[in-house]
Structure formats: C-alpha cells, structure tokens
Length: 246
Ligand code: PXP
Image (cartoon, rainbow, N blue to C red; front, side, top):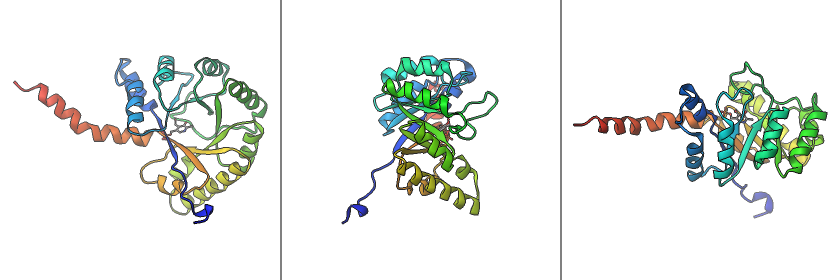
C-alpha cells in the first residue's frame, strides 16, 4: 500500500453546546447546564467542546466559559467576535482554540463568514495576540480564494470553512457548493492552514464533507442537540410517569 492509499485519520468532532444554553436561558434557570452537556459529549467521544460567547449573551454565559475551561478534558474552542471585550476574555480564559466569527445582533445564528480581507489589519493583530498567549486561532470564512489567502496572511492556524451554503442548497447547487468547499480546502491546505468546517452540517449532508481529504475538524451543534432532544424524550417521559405512581 502506497502512503497515498493509507486511510485518512478520522475527522475531529467539536460539539457546539450553545443550544443547551439556549434552552436554559429560556427560563433563566440552572438547567440544562451546557457544562453537564459538554461532559456527556466528551464521554460519548467528542474531541472538542465549542461555545460561542456572544456579545448579547443570548445563550452561553461568561460563567459557562470559565467553568468549561476547568472541566473540559479534550479541547475548548471559543467562538468569538473580533471585539476587544471578547479578546480580553479569551486572553484571560485561554481556550485551546479561538474561532473568530462575524457577529450581528439581529441574526438568528452566525450568517456568512468573517471578512478577513476587509478587516485584515485588525484580524492579524488579534490573531497575533491570541497566538502569543498559546491559543490556536481559526478563522470562520466562506471558502473564497481571497478570504483563504487573507487568512494565511493574518497568521491563523486554521480556517473553518462555512458549510451553510452547501447545507442549504439543493440539487446542482449543492454539488457546486461542495466543489467550492473542496477547492477551498485544497487552497487552505496548500497555504499551510489546517482545514475545519462547520455550520448546518447534519446526519444527511455530512457524508460528502467527510470525503474532503484535507478536512481535520468539524464543529456541529444544531443537528446533534436536536437529535438528542428527540431521542431523550422517551426516557424523560417515562421517568416522570414513574414518579406519579401511587
Ligand atoms: N461553526 C461556527 C463558526 C458557528 O458559528 C456555528 C454555529 O454557532 C457552528 C459551527 C455550528 O453550526 P450548527 O449549529 O449549524 O451545527
């Protein structure tokens, strides 16, 4: 077997537990705790825990990030805006990886990739400060040639290719979106960047993404938490039913 035929190493799975915090924040109470969810995800084989501390604190809270820093046994990936408040928190908490994302207050979730080319000076400066503190820096970008080139210029360790367009596309558009991801992965790898992917990946669309040779890591939230809620419902109802017996 030539080295070319050697099986590719498995892709690392980062589980985004923001949605657990979303359920908790709906009641502003203690449960469900994303810290507990993170521990269970790790016991099930997750290679990384991902959280997005948003400026509006709509789901993950500062307390979650700080406790997770102590409890996560795999790796902690902090998604964050390129805002000074978040940079200060990251430098203090020291996640294993920071993933720089664009952030708009009104959005339901992260929309589009970071404009690294447009904000190169600032992204480069923040990347250097985070890396000097021993934090790996991933840039969440659309798989566009110029954004990939700018990410290398910014000194990032990796790019997380935005898979949202691929996830939402149908038919020929989906095949085209996949080609864009494949080409982007190759370009990023050639530029010395590790290749990650995320957003909108689910149990039906992840297969072709897994075939991207250069891909090392995916971060998945919604699909996994949605499945967990439904698969856990039967047990949860029967546990309550048992308490009502007399
Ligand atoms: N990666 C990044 C950079 C994200 O912003 C998100 C959403 O928070 C994800 C991955 C996970 O996306 P999803 O919840 O659609 O799996």
